[in-house]
Length: 171
Image (tube, rainbow, N blue to C red):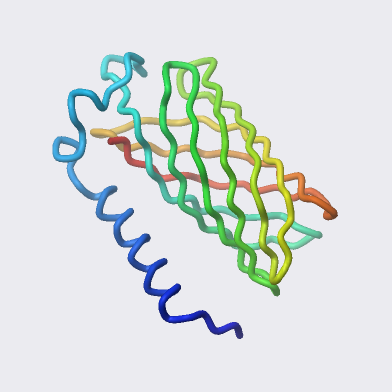
């Protein structure tokens, strides 16, 4: 089992705790008047920022690996958003995947995306391209759930399929 420096573990723990505090704060405390984009999924305007928890499965070399991640996105306008995701898959050599993405929203909650990033399996660093399709269902005040399917093209490896759900909060 790998041992990580305490300073790194504490930094990661503080980051995760901060993210969950933001998610759990009421929308009225985190949203400002300038935090809205003139787009709608019904009657309410979208908030620009979304932070979410990704839970899913990675299919790699005929194996199914539990995957967890944190996702952030910034809604530019009705049809475009930018963001990033950090995912961790539990495998023999635990690996972390970091992706910067662009999503196109052609109709209501449907989105298509593409992203570039890096995968770190063990001591290696591999370039990665990701294609995404998903649908966001909004409910409550700023809450949403988004099932998605991802196809990762990884340098010098077979492609991986990642299926999961993002539980998110707009602010």
